[in-house]
Image (tube, rainbow, N blue to C red; front, top):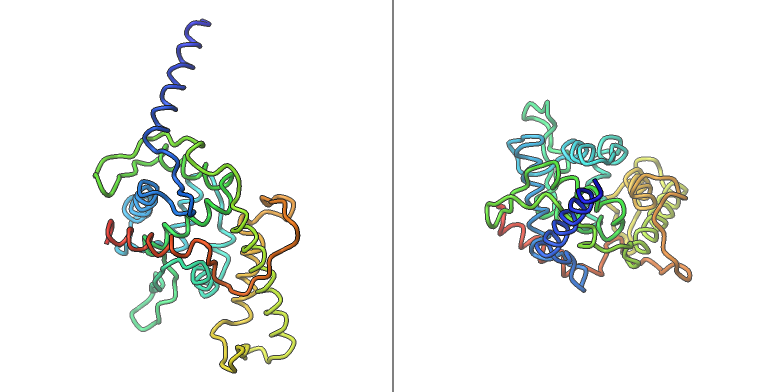
Length: 273
């Protein structure tokens, strides 16, 4: 009995080593994902729209993303079902996640497209950011995805291994990413409150150059809620970092990995468009 257990443990250890050798560490020093990581994410996007929730469009809608997260052990209905489409689009724009606007399911052809749907390259960007922000939350989602789904490498046409070791990912949240998220949440909430105090309900806040903002109070408030608590936990449940004070946020757009995400979009277009 003991010998059987030892043999099983050794086999598991060998499988883990082989999987780690296959995947390697999936993030580079500049916070970019490796080519294999990008292909994995692109393959997951293709699986969602082709098998999990088949659609004539390759772009991923909020309802498709909601279903994906539920199937891999998460629940992001607070974002993908309860947040208005225009606010989701604003969040995507703030993160640099390329997306389109799709028609509503019951659209008769006369309505304006309004459903924000991530391009495959936008999904790669979205997942990369989420992994940097909260690996303890999002690594299990990807592990479950390769375990439960048949994810095809878009470059080779072969299935990815069903084992994805935790050691292939960062162990802790990226400090710059967490700090930026928290700062943006505070900035958006402050701007929404200032706009409410000086504007009529249907007016938009003028920008510094005197032009009016395209973003409504509601969109800023919804986005502020997301950035302040992106995993939709209470404050005590959020992943934290130890730091001295908060960095002033001047922009709603995260700039640290920007060059990385530009290359991600190019890579994903090459692979799956």
